[in-house]
Length: 129
Image (cartoon, rainbow, N blue to C red):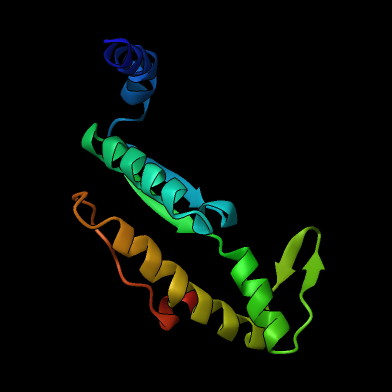
């Protein structure tokens, strides 16, 4: 019974946000800590499915910074940071597209199966634009 009350309280608290963001695009960044934790990914995807159900148009963008840095190190490239952001030259972009369109994306997309989520494939040309 307490669990049902807690869920009802959460929905009541969320109601104003649901009204405010209904029919609006909401961008959710899937950060490195979530990419490393499958249980956290699953919880996030459940939340995203709920947001979509109540009328929010959710776009998930994942960073994958840890994977990119790891792949750069393996390729012998030193990340260059400009004002807190990674500078992306062509060699780095090749690594980024491999990370984004490879392991990270496929893991995230596979976790959304059965949640009525629409998925778009990441392609190297989409990353390069």
